[in-house]
Image 1 (cartoon, rainbow, N blue to C red):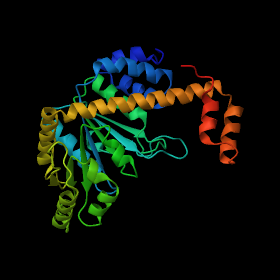
Image 2 (image 1 turned 90 degrees about the vertical axis):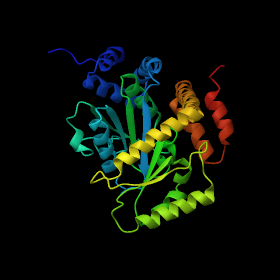
Image 3 (image 1 turned 90 degrees about the horizontal axis):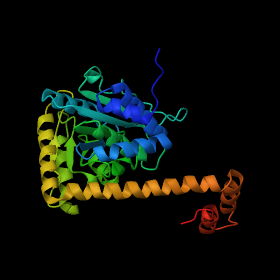
Length: 320
């Protein structure tokens, strides 16, 4: 029996040629981080920049997974390939994703034109780790034209997804105070498109009115783009075609106005900053022994030392 391939370069070559097993192993290496993840990043960067990323986010229970499944169906009806990253809460025991890809979107599990992967948030602030950015780039580099990133909808993750996507869809439900929740969570600021899902339920018109009023009061516009408010019933597919047509309209608008390029440039700057921060911390931990690191940390916690001086001591071995 042939040994399992673990070399990132060999795996990437196989993934580019359509091997889904190699793609899955590369994503696992990205989640694990370290040298292999950095190697993958160097391999994928020159081949990326062609895919279009759509974020689907909103409050828990809004029907995001069902809507995502309906969008997949719409794309596959046009013979378009699509990849999905489902960002799930981390298991407190294993650090892995609690909700697996077999639980979500089961109708597409055997479709070779669909690739679905669950990724754990791993407790990072905002829920999306640097691994998500690298995973999107990998899917782009192996030829996925459309990438959907669905978030679990907890805390700051809704805001962070806007930094990862070219178009962000915010999903709410009729009633249940979703419009107010959206405003409080900062979703009003990141939405390119609002979707009132489960629109066959009572209160859809009132929710639309509330969102329209909030948009009027906030005077939000992304380069003259006022986020449209659409209605869908994901379980039946109603409104999904209009939603995807609106995504296409936003793509055209953001391309012609330069918004798309500005967002992608911002994304790269933020990624570079985060990489530098993590590499510095890793290097500092290598130089500063574990006991010394803990001692400095404890001095800060016990108010014996200020954080700035402690940080200087942790970084003192790093030379420019």
